[in-house]
Image 1: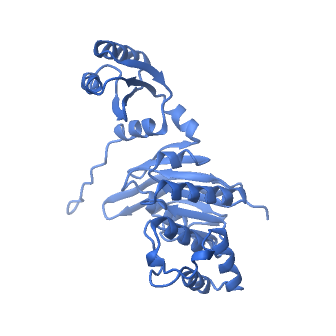
Image 2 (image 1 turned 90 degrees about the vertical axis):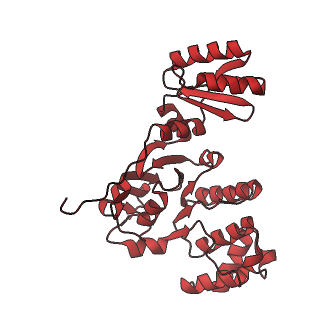
Image 3 (image 1 turned 120 degrees about the horizontal axis):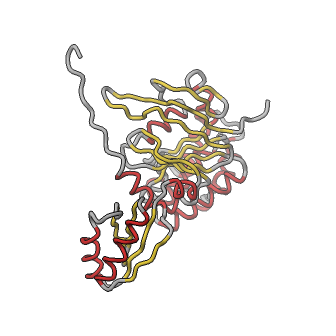
Length: 318
């Protein structure tokens, strides 16, 4: 039977804990071989959604498939085909790199364990450190070890929950190079991240806040779909602070955000925004020009227009 076009295809996923709706009728389609970014603030429901996709949690509502298996009825089969990397390093710090991988290989009942462990060590650049205790590794090397462990049983889907948190930029770049190699070989990757530069490395992405899907598509499609106009204002630092204060609440200026030595001012009313920015910049002796909005501009915009829901406890007899 031919592989389905979509590695993940779900709709209406809902999960509640007590009175709080953590995931609210969420839908997602991820093509095979894609790196799909999953973005959102802390508490937005990303981890809960990932756990429903890989069979660790059962949704209260909704349906769908992961790798062609029903997420409700065939969760055990999904688990065998998925590599799941959690936010926190979860291997044994008092075992060496090689011992950790050998232990994981035994859990999965992998044949030719030594051969597969050696191959994983070579692929992730860990072979020279094979005898080093995991607890002595830096964040970047622990990340490599965790990824190697996820790949030992040759999964078809990788679910990575903020895998680069606390890792230096160089290690993050190398990690993403590995992900693109895997995707090129046909593996599907769903990765949650807070980093905008990582979001731009994804083939497609979804932004979730308070359990709801706010935007999805390629980075270019998400930016275009926000219909957001953005101006950059540059000049002397004190004058920029004065301009920022003047623009807050000005017509069309929905957001005023410092970006290093300049301001980004954004809004959905392009005409009103242009008038306000040019007026304030001229008065302060600053330079202003329209620019293409970035993902960070768009995500700040989406968050500001999405109020945090208020949980109301059920009253007795209600």
